[in-house]
Image 1 (tube, rainbow, N blue to C red):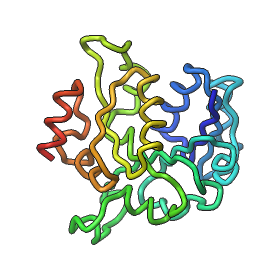
Image 2 (image 1 turned 90 degrees about the horizontal axis):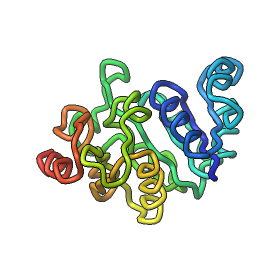
Image 3 (image 1 turned 180 degrees about the vertical axis):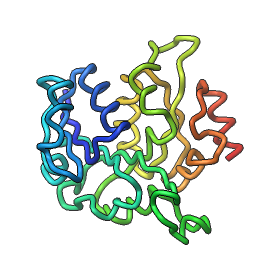
Length: 209
C-alpha cells in the first residue's frame, strides 16, 4: 500500500485517486481553493481519501501526482516533493494557459519545465494523453486483446519503474517513450495524444510524433 498525494483534484486527479483507492492505496487530495472545498469528493471516495493543502499532500505522498493547469506549475510546492517520484499529467493549452515562447518554439517541453521547478524530484510524464474517465473505465487484465497502452517519459529509470507498476495495476500496458524531453511526443496535436491503442500501435504513433 502506498499513499498517493495529489496536487490538483480536477478530472484527471479525481480519476487517478479513484483508481488508486480501488487498488488499495490511500490518497491525499488538494487543490488551489482549500481542503474544505473537497469534502464532497472525499466523502464520495471513501475512508482511504482525505483532503489537505498542497504542501500537506506533497508531504504525505510516497508518490505525488501534479495535475494542475500548466499555467499554475510554479505554484507547486518544491520542498515536500524533494527526492520523490512525481507524475506530471500536464498539457499546454495556450487558450487557457497563455503563451509560452519556449514551448511554442519547441525549445523545451511541459514536463521539463516542471522538472526545472522541482530540481530535487524525479518527474515522470504520464496520464496526460488519456481522457480522465478512461483511467477508471478502460483498464483491462494483463494479456487482454483490448488492453490499451499509455506512454510515459522520464530521466530516472527507477522512477519510471514505479510509475509503470502503478499504471499496469490500473489495467494498462506501458510504453516508455524515453527521456523526459520525449514526453513532447505524446502531447497535444501529436499522433499519440488521446490515441486509444495497444502497445505496438502506440509505439508507431510515438515514432510518428
